Image (tube, rainbow, N blue to C red; front, side, top):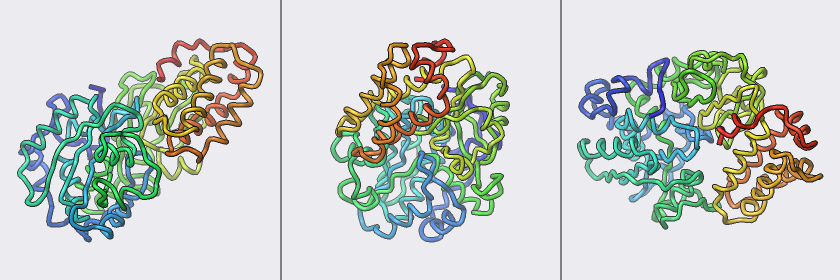
Length: 416
């Protein structure tokens, strides 16, 4: 399992990580019985006041999302705890499910009671075997809540299988590809019923807010966005892996917490493969806070912070990610099949030094034209990632267009 360290202690507080999943008995001894009596309008109002943001990537306010489902709620509403985590380098959801599964399940049941659902499905990536086993044990050892169905669903391997409409489609049709909205899952989801699809980290925090209150939640955080968040840091540090940080912690501080040094870091991929590149020198003292990052044209996303050393080639790194995204597309619309394919082919030529005359111009044009034209948002993510690479690594792209590379590609290949 990926190395984990935390500061401060909130989401991952409790037993030592090498002890494995916290049992239900230990969970209750540490935090008390699940506060099911607080579920409903009071909890939704608390979530709204806290400003808790979704942790699956989009950052939508959790309280607002619950209220939308509750307002449509009727008998048969469904809650899905989404822990598919198809992002290749992210490990925070599987860490939470592996170590603190009962905190997630508490949050999922509280959500169900709040929106009028009688079914909770915990959706875990099938490749994350430790997480799958921990959730299965947790479900087996919990006392049942009257009128509540709670079960585990293994999500198929695939980058898009955790997208909310793909989750619903898989549960309905066993086809984990996104669908075109509308309707949204909150309007018509599993079995045609209103469905709340919520990331597991968001649910874990909802369970803590139900116990400790909005004021407690807002004690952490250095800026406008309050609370802590799980992040996955990868790259040239001594202790890569999952850490819990206050929103507003700087990139420099995170690198140091992971046993690294800012020296020698050339670029940073923030927010995962649906995120974007930034120059390390511009970002080192920038707070890792969704609002601050958004003002700089970047995103917190799924909390992935991937460091690219100075000696690595940004063209190669970008090519590897776009090629992966092209291979992981749902292949149900032209922009994915042809657009991503064309971008990946041109990038491969540029990276290997055999570019055609118009490759660089075409990449710039295609990455702009592709936005908003797909059947889902998958091509948007790939196009945005490419556009950030073209900007951050502009000099290196120009060299590659001339058939040269100033850095060895071997390090960049590890990005995929």
